Image 1 (cartoon, one colour):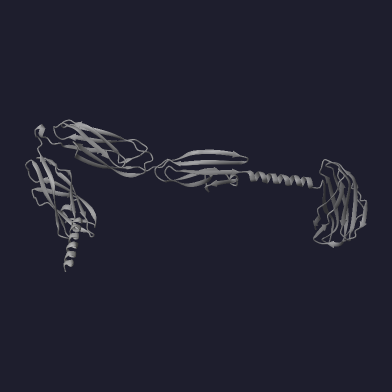
Image 2 (cartoon, one colour):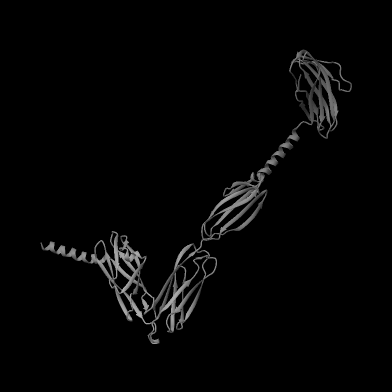
Length: 480
């Protein structure tokens, strides 16, 4: 029994501090708690409310001292039935206080009640308001200043800018050693100055940022200190602009044997990623021999045909484009063609025989007689010796033994073992580039309708070096 009681007491002791550990926090933060008597000034507070619970709650704000005019921004925070705060979250209410009638000089503790709708608990804090005289003796004047800030809302980090702070002394009191501390994510500066009675001061701060600063929105806080005590706070915002500027950092041409390599280097001198389109004019012949890294695509317009790259560049990043024109394959192709041509010229027969057939007579729509022409040509600059020509006439035709005047007569006209007739000629010599024509007639034994094909003529000859070569003509084709 005693052990059970001790265990209950122990659990109760642990639960009590835990319950106190998670409680609603109401924290007033003064923005301006000094009011000049008989003026239109008002006090302002930021009231931070922390909901530590795991559920949403509504908190009503109430000042029960009805000698004060109290309102909020937004207006509904104070008179709209309370503010809704999500679980484990903070909310800041902006309250303003002004006496409804003339109050004596002095400090006033204005109670603020914050009530939870869920639990019914009420949390109390005091809003301190000092009412001071507008014309006290010099030694009795408090420190009162007003300040404002002027600076660009948007700043290009590549350009210089300026921030101006305007300060005014509200009272006829000399303020010495007034310190202004300016702080933000990117700006850190401070200065100390004096303010004459009812005097004004303009403080200028040059702003210089690194061009590499990324785009962001920055909050600048201005805190005025007198004797290490904060007497005034201001806040403003500005943005760093994003920009991109793609520049051609390099463009070099490397030359080799029938090979040209162009190295192009692009650089994004900006603070945001960007896309860049690079175009290089080209023609269809060039593109046959061009290779690029990275790959490109073709765009045609009224200005011509272009190789185009769509590039993505990160801030301060470099991209390389390599364009290679390689004509080496074309060169080796030309060399191969030249070798083949030279081989052909070397290996071709120096003697050319062209066979031609002409119809001389047609009977009943059929070829009955025709004339055969053999054109011989020495196409070299050297003489050809001992030229022996043989031509075969098919068995369906006979050779006319009468030959035209001026033509070379055959040495022999004999029967061919394969059927038909074999005609042979001998020419002792053909001078360089000399041409000869041999002709003879044949008559058809049968009526030939349609086409007629004659076998190729053959020739053997000797070159000046003593080599014996042979060649043949084309087929003699004709149609009735």
